[in-house]
Image (tube, rainbow, N blue to C red):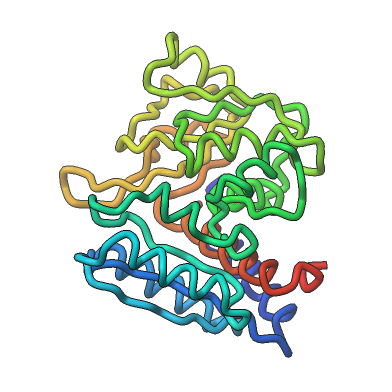
Length: 281
């Protein structure tokens, strides 16, 4: 079965629009430079905000801006009570430390969930922090698709701070739709194919086009593809060989229309949470 992340994401956005009605959450977005891909991502995020009733404010800054000056802009928004969430579009120019920029954001406005305080709250299982959008979107995708996670063996291929590590921390939590047994594998893992074949739920987030082949997947497994890559034919492909693996997986996400729309839906959810957590109840 192919999981339609776009449809599920749209359903979540419709639910959020109902909760937002009568409220005006504001998301501040900072874009540094003129990277075409970043401009497309920002446009998509702002369009999604408008669709559910979230106001977005865009601050476009030159590629040459000094790190200290970028931090000054962030601190202004930290102090501004009319800005509820702050999003920095990555990547940043090489002369700017992404770590320093993430640390500069007020953790209560960090809707990406990257600040060390929010990472710590995730590890501790505290509900008042922000979970990074892609891991949260994957967990929600599994829930909405009625795929059991409790007690299942989840193998995540990829150990990034954006997906692999926080997803592992999320799915082992003692809470509904989690409680999984998680193996965090990567390119240096020995006997990687043996690990992936042991998965009830296999998450590919390694950033290598069509890395996961049919031989690496147990028949009947659930396969979640996080990758977005360009093939030699300039087509967008995931980290999974979709055409091969879909024949044996019980459920699989396509690329596109899989995890991507869920990431944007969770950004909207986190922005509403930053505005007022009670709106999500």
